[in-house]
Image (tube, rainbow, N blue to C red):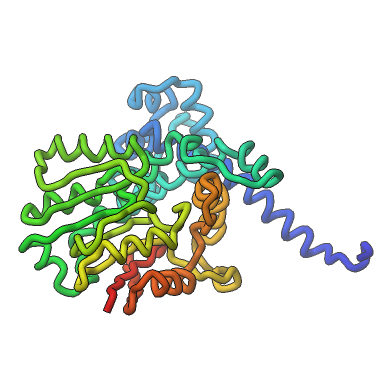
Length: 357
């Protein structure tokens, strides 16, 4: 290819896009900091204020707050009055950036950028040598995932997600056996245990940190119908025990996802139901061109979901395994009927309702 073959206009347009990516990536980090420090929550309740007033209200160092405000102003997030030297967070922006805005608080999801960036060196090394980066390299991932789940799953669980399975709420009220595989911090399971005291709940996860949090939450709420256990779910050896098994964003990063699905099918009673929440998308990249979170999800997959599986000599399925592959694997695991649902508020996830007959 010669210089004459290059379309200068396309080069210029792509250059502008890359500059935008650089600025937006930087703004994502600053937005994560605004969430973690509580600055957005504080500013939402303040009148136009100076950097000194904002930092005092947030109990933070003024010099850092002032520089952060600069990024927010030039990024179009915070408004600035140069005459009064004041800053304000428009209510329309607060509606997407504060904890009170959940489940619409997008600032919480910005935390993933910093978490993933912290392992960049190890990911680069994996590109060269193969293998993967283990869960232990992501000390905040459980915390961020719990907050993510707290916004997307918990508010919708009782009124929208569980009713995707016909008659399930009534059965839970009467009393059934429930297992959550890869339960993480157990927030969904603890919520169900409180809502359905006649049912019995079990949570398994490989993360000792997650299990500790789940147990502590159950103890705080006085729930006696729930138990948590540190367990490699690929070694799940129970047969025909559970009426309902759930997984919330927990299958695609398993070392042996096919084995896990087979063990789940085996652990279900003949009339049991498997409810699987996992990433919405196609198994084919060309079908994801218009996905609103496409670049983000492939990045999360590369820098967490795929690599933690490969670190265990696993399959490295990745977050974007997609509906086609999921249906195929569920069928191979023994599920004869699979329905795929999506909720209006949640464009990030599919909900698979799978039964063995």
